[in-house]
Image 1 (spheres, rainbow, N blue to C red):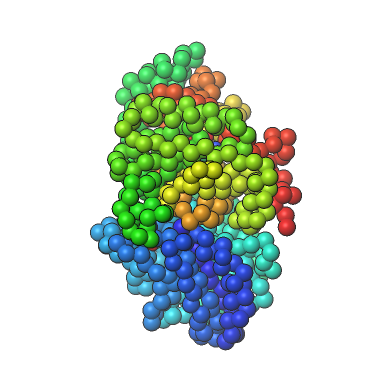
Image 2 (image 1 turned 30 degrees about the vertical axis):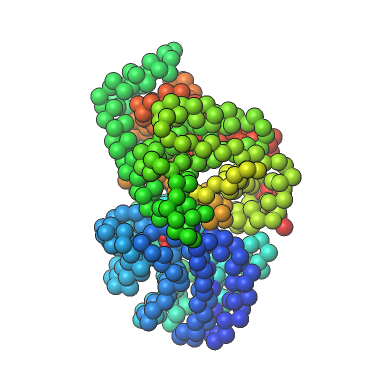
Length: 551
Ligand SMILES: Nc1ncnc2c1ncn2[C@@H]1O[C@H](COP(=O)(O)OP(=O)(O)OP(=O)(O)O)[C@@H](O)[C@H]1O
Ligand SMILES: NC(=O)CC[C@H](N)C(=O)O
C-alpha cells in the first residue's frame, strides 16, 4: 500500500512548518510503501507545499515512483484501479495505474464522472497548477485511508498520523472529491452522485476542523434502495439439517441463478486482485528472482467469508506458489484457531495439490501491550473506541503474519470485510427481522452499508498497510456490490427462526460455499474477529472510548 502525505500553508514561502510535521509522520508513511519513498517541496502561488509518498509497487511492468511531478501537476496516489472504462486495461498492464490516472485528471472536464467510470479503491492528492487547484478524496466506498487536519492556516492530508501530533485529524469522509482553490482558499465538495444518511454530519464535522464553509453545489437525493416484500413463504425450512437446507435451496432455480451470478462476479473480483501484482514476494522483489513463495495470503479465521476467498484464490494463484492462511489468536485454543484448522482440512480435501501454509500467529498479552503502545494506537488514530482497539490490534498482528519460525512474504492479503454488511451476517440483522419484519431488516442493511466507509475500512487500511502489504477486499468490488445490493434483502439473508443460526444469515453466500464444496464451512456460525481471536473482553462496552488507546 502506498503512503501519501501533503501539507500546505497559505501566505507562506517557507515549508519549514510543513516539513516539521512531515518529519514526524514520515516513518509511518514510509512503512506503507517499502519499495520507494520520496518528497517534493514547492513554493507555488503564495502557498508552500510538502508532498511525500512511499510506494508499494503493485501495478505496471515497472514501479512508478511518487510523488509524480511535471510542469502541470504534482500527484500522490494510494490505491488500485482494477477496472472501468476511463483507463483501458492494456494501458494499466503496461504502465500501471498511477500515471494514467494522473493523465485522466489532468484533462478531465468532469472529475466525478471520470472517476465514477473507474473501479477500485483509492485515495489521492493532486495539485493542478494550471487550474490553481488542489483535488483530494477517497473512492466512493472509502476503502483507503486519508486523514485531514488543520493547524493555523496549514492543511494536512495524510494516509496515517500519530497521536503525538499537535494537529487534530479526522478521516476525510468518502463523500466525493474535495477541491481547494489556491486563489480564494475556498474548499468545495464535488459529491459522488448519491448521498449517505450521515452526509451532512460528516461534512459539518469537516467544516469545524477546517473552520470554513464547504461549498456544495448539488443537493443530492438520499441513496436508498426501495423495499419489496417477499411474495411467498420464502425460505421456510425449519428443523432440517444444514445439508438438506442447502441442497433444497440449490435446487430452487431462482435462488440458484443468484448463487451462480455471485460466483461469477466474486471469481472475477478475486482474479483481478490476485493478478494485479508483480510476480515476486516481499523477499524476492529486490533481486527480481522469480520465486515460488507466497505472494498472496488470506486473513483466515476459517469462517465462511474467508473460506470462499481462499478456495477461489486457489484458482488464480500460480500453481507453484503456496498460499498463506494467516490465523491470529490471543489465547492458544481460541475459537478461530479451531475453525481455521477445520476449514484448512476442508480446503486440503478440495484442493490437495495446493500448498496451504496455515500460519498460527499466537500473541501474548505483553507483546500486544508493547506493540499497541509502540505503533498500533497511532495507526488506529483518530478512531478511539474499545472496538477499534480490538479490531485494529487483531488485524495488525494477523497481517504481520509472523511466528517464531516464519514471516509471511505476501504482498497482497485478501480479507472478508464487507460480507456481513452486504449479505446480512450480524446478530443485529436477526434482531431487526424479529422486531420489524423484512422492512426493518432491509433498513438495517441500508444503514450498515451507508456506514461502512466511516466505521472500519480506513482504519483497517491503516493497520494492515503498516506491514507494507496491500489489503484487498473482493466483497467490496464494485460489480459484486452492485449485484448484491440489487437483490432484495430476503434473497441475501434469512436470519429468521425458520432457518437456524449458521444457515439463515448470509444464506446466499453460505449456499455458494456449499455449492463450491465447502460443506462444513458453509454452516459455521459467525464469530466476529474480536471474539473469535479472543482479543476482546466481552464485559467491556465496545463503543466506549478506549483508555488503552490514549497517549
Ligand atoms: N482470527 C482471525 N485471524 C485472521 N483473520 C481473521 C480472523 N478473524 C477474522 N479474520 C479476517 O477478518 C475478516 C472480517 O472479520 P469478521 O469479524 O467480519 O469475520 P467473520 O464474519 O467471522 O468472517 P469469516 O466468516 O471470514 O470468519 C474475515 O473475513 C477474515 O478475513
Ligand atoms: N500501493 C499503492 O497504492 C501503489 C499505487 C499503484 N497502484 C502502484 O502499484 O504503483
